Image (cartoon, rainbow, N blue to C red):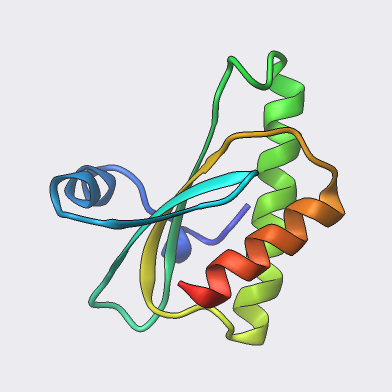
Length: 107
C-alpha cells in the first residue's frame, strides 16, 4: 500500500473528476492525469469487477501495481501529477510493470 501522502481519495478524488484531465490508453491501462500543486504525485486505482471476478485477484493486481509505483517513486521518475488508473485487462506482472512504467514516465 502506498503512503497516505501519495493516495488520491475522498474530496481530492471528487475534485479530480470535476476538473478537465488528460488521458492515456494502452492495451492494459486507461490513465487519467492532471497537474497538481504538490511537490509529489498522487494515485488512485480501480479494478473492475467485470474483468476480475474474485476480490482476491483484484487485490493482487492492486498490490502489484502499487509496488511498481513505489519503485518508480524511489527512482523519482514520476512527475507531479494526479493519476487515476483503470486496469482494463489481465496480464502478468512483467507486462504490467513494462506498460505502467512506460505510461507514467511519459505522462
